[in-house]
Image (tube, rainbow, N blue to C red; front, side):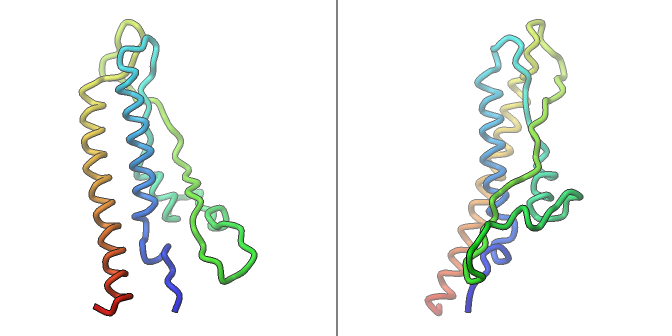
Length: 137
């Protein structure tokens, strides 16, 4: 009996990829905190995960499928999320045009790290359960 990983894992794999992407963006913001004219960036995680799960208004089922030559191939998503990176509105912009607020960025980064770790633990749990089922434990 074949296992459909997309239905078994749900959105956990997509959430992990999105959390990693968000970490990269937030790290970039922190790295450029002193760069004149740098604009802080972010994206809407809820909209991105909704798009990945197919609950967004612009969902296209065929867009997420990989081209295969046989129906026996395992379908894997290509992670084409419709999450455009947007600029963050500053609470208090600096005189040099930089909109990075280090306190906000560090808080967002810490929250995202916690969510990333939780997603990773849930995903690990899914694979451990699948491993136990295979071994018959």
